[in-house]
Length: 303
Length: 322
Image (tube, rainbow over all chains, first blue to last red):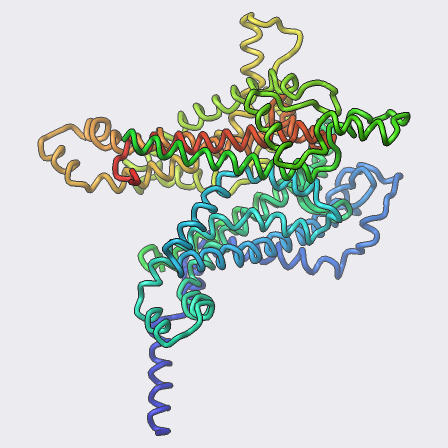
């Protein structure tokens, strides 16, 4: 008996060696693509600096208004100058990056969960359920979501960061649901699902513990690519003034200085670094995302 | 064919009704109504008077009666009064609709003018340096957020170089109908149009490149080559006929992108269109205007999607659902 168990373990280990895990494949793919590797390193540096910044930046000093120090151009004291309240732009840039990234990740995870649940239910049950859910989804997808998000942001009572994340997530899962459903609908015909059904496993257990692991690579790819989108959307909304509540800096709030022609032209240090930083982050995330996408599809792999 | 068009148009009706219902519910949830607006700054009004006027406007009726009245008027183009401007919403929309349509139309034309040649070059000469450059450009177009790009364009071309005006739709000193007016309008349109068009090319280039690569190996192309058709004609007469048609059909879907894009573009270039009006109205909490704008945009997207589906089904009979 014991003999057999050891054999099985060996077999599993052998099998694992032959089929490297997704993370390992992704890493191999990134290592082989210089742009993706560069992006990953740059992005890691940005993330680390942003999240570790509270260690060396005095956050209370950042919110203190100092009228003697208004609109100072970049200097050794203030690397990126100061804004209309005499606050250090570089410090705000770091805090803003941290907030924008955190919100982007939250929205991505939350909308991923919505999309996953919706897509799995639709794909797993199929038939009428699928039909009804898909008609609803088709309708949701044609809504002008940017306008709806803005309207919700304005009319929601007790507006704060959590409600903002919820509102954004409520409009960010449509594409994901459709993608997962299209995959789940082919997965439900597989033998392992039928076998599990015959054994009497409850539907939710099959969906989340048996079907989902087989779709996980798809979900990971989609999530990396939509992370960039969500950060873009959040900063865009904050730029228009409908994003993070006042007092919580975001990259978008820094860029929103640029709605005044004088500031756009003469006080570029307030908004330009934030705009460029968003651009760099988007490009990095997308490069990494492309590598992840290739890794998940054996036909596209470069490595 | 006719059956499909009929069916597809009929799907639109419940969609429009559902959209209007959701927007109506939202409008009800928004603070303030026609009466609070009318009494703003008038402290003399007693609660009884307000109640009387509420009754007169029908604001005490059940919601479905109010909804029926609202939608009945909206269909005829009457979206009620703006609280802030104290004039019909329709008056506010006039002029701005043309501006936004003009902006969107030019953006579409420029997008296709850039995207189609690039897509063809990338698809025909795959893996050449030209293809690699186009793919890289396309990658940037996909990853760059519209508002960041528009701001950078504004900063570089309007402020640093000073080649173009930084905002507005036309200089008020020029006279309508003169050549100068047209030139000035074009100058004002150039940056907004380029900012959105340069990024909007993404989908078309990607589609066209992939489709041409797929078509290249088809039998009908081999046949044409075997007959001795010159390489140029293989593309113009055979491959492009198949590849370009669906692009015409994506036109309707583009409207969705243009509408959310117009909010950013018009705000950044202070271009007097519907997108700018939307942000201004929501900042002023002028909710009748907001409601009207969301309804118009939603309807435009629904109709655009329907047109796309119909054109697509004419072009490609395979997708006709029975």
